[in-house]
Amino acid sequence: MPHNTDLINIVAVGLGMAFVFGALANRLRLSPLVGYLVAGILVGPFTPGFVADQDLANQLAEIGVMLLMFGVGLHFSLKDLMDVKSIAIPGAIAQITVATVLGWVLAWLMGWPVVSGFVFGLALSVASTVVLLRAMEERRLLDTRRGKIAVGWLIVEDLVMVVALVLLPVLADIYTDRGGDASPGAGSIALMFLWTLVKVSAFVAVMLLVGRRVIPWILERIAGTGQRELFTLSVLAIALGVAFGSATLFGVSFALGAFFAGMVLNESEFSHEAANDSLPLRDAFAVLFFVSVGMLFNPMIVVEHPWQVLATFLIIVVGKSIAAYWIVRLFKHPRSTALTISMSLAQIGEFSFILAGLGVGLQLLPETGRDLILAGALLSIIINPLLFAWLDRWQARQEAAAHAASVAHAPPQPPEYGVPADLHGHAILVGYGRVGRQLAALLQQRDVPLVVVEDDNELVRKARERGFTVVRGNVAAEAVMRESAPERAALAIFAIPQALEAGEAIERMKAINPALTVLARAHSDGEVKHLLQHGADGAVLAERELAYSLAEMVMSTPPFRPARPGATPVETPQPG
Image 1 (cartoon, rainbow, N blue to C red):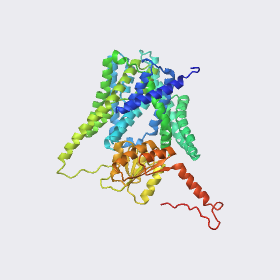
Image 2 (image 1 turned 90 degrees about the vertical axis):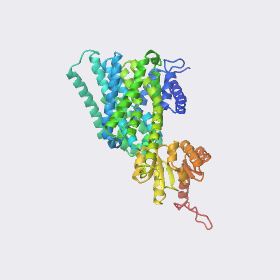
Image 3 (image 1 turned 60 degrees about the vertical axis):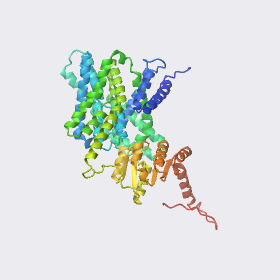
Image 4 (image 1 turned 30 degrees about the horizontal axis):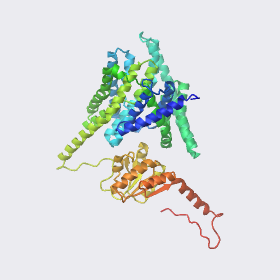
């Protein structure tokens, strides 16, 4: 090639390979993360064939880390944590402590320094957000007490890891000063931690006092321009700009800066739009992050250190699970809750990779430790669906036994959320965004029984506050679609802009209830055709309807209103 195309190579080949193996992993009912990591292994230096530029991969991965942490902050919910704080906070801290100690013991047996064992154990202690939420959503558990505890537990783990990202550089400075052996003075250690605390506190103060006012103000002004691409650009500029500024001005990590940018943005009324607009780029760079992590993995670790790989895997899947199970049981929660929490946490993911990369970069963790963490992550993510399958079968047996035992007693109470069994002839509204909220309000005014399907936490909360029955999740998932009771519904309205997901769900709904009337939203002629082909009875092209409405308004104004005798006036249709 005549020009240097290393960046194009890694983006094109990395995303292409990630797509192929991610789709294959999904087909095998595994997390797509497994596919992304495998793609990275195949384009890395430890396997034959194409080898991507490692330095460029690391820089792209850094952007991926910033956008991942921005997403964590954007979806951080203090309310969700407070709802289950009595179990989630002490439980998560205790479980992190147990896993860290187990990791440290394994590192000690391998002859590693104490600090390496600490970083290694800490990386094994935190579960993957992506894997846990997917498992919860598939089983419709997010709205249950078990699901809320798992999510709250995960929030605490993420907060502990954010603190760790701040303190690890300080630990590295201390470790460097001591040369790995000599004990530094207590005064110097205290000064390092104090100076770090001052810098972080200054950054937090600026974000809370200035950022939480300036950032929402900027977004409000940009949103007022009506330029969607400019709004998307502003969200990304805020995420990356705050991350860069925090590192340059305050010496804190890119990850911490991006996390606080997301937290501040979360308080804005435009947070939902910001999340949606940043999602595609965030997902793309997150995929490149996982690919770059896979590139660092040496598969020979399984051959050269088999028992260490096995021990790492057992700490993640067995050690963490047992600790979480007994912690939950000590707090007097039922066995089903304890098993759900323990299975949810029996894997590691993105934060583990971030910690491992930082640990190796700061020379706190040997490269062998990173390889063991990656091997443990791959194996634990692969085995996690099998653990949940066993749990599903166990719970089915328990429920069957409980049902048989309660036949002679009063029927069980209905769930806190769900479609009432006696609801018939209702309308299903998919999406509670700006369009969906307007439709819901109109249907509510006309006393139409309504079931809302929405997967965004904040929008679910708002819909429930308005008194709507809400099914939480993505309508493209068959379990979510069936929970909205399409067999008993009279109408389904798809207010979401994702025509592919809508078409898939419409086809399934029509198969269940051919008499169901389905209306959908589209943004192009191609989308209209796709929706109609999949069973929609009508599809509204938003831009075209807007043009019709504007044209009717124009023709009703005095300069253009027909006035000659015999002329046919253009009537503006009335609502309803």
